[in-house]
Length: 109
Image 1: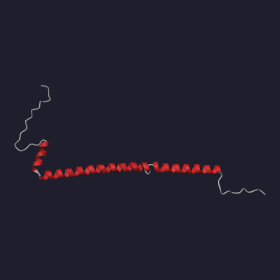
Image 2: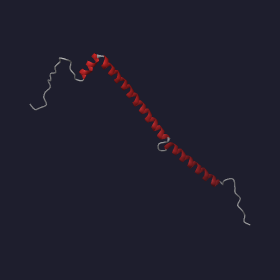
Image 3: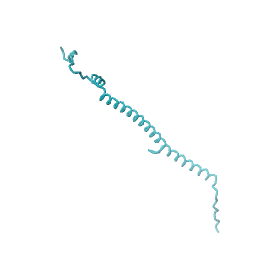
Image 4: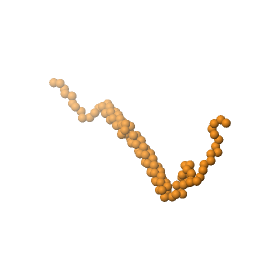
């Protein structure tokens, strides 16, 4: 009769080392995947959060600017002196005013 080899429940020291190496490699690969997975890793999450904060800041600035412009529109509709001041900044004239241009012509003379 052939001697049947007895199956051992325990691993040999060489098998234990190999098993530990495989588990460590799998753990390392899993850890790297969690950190650097394209579009879903920790690095991508940090980048998305930074983009979110930038978008919130831009929104806040635009909201403040929008409120300022709405206040200016209200003032233009309600305050004739403010309207005149803005019109003069833009080059408009009041009734009866004349423009005299004393600038030199660009031609050769």
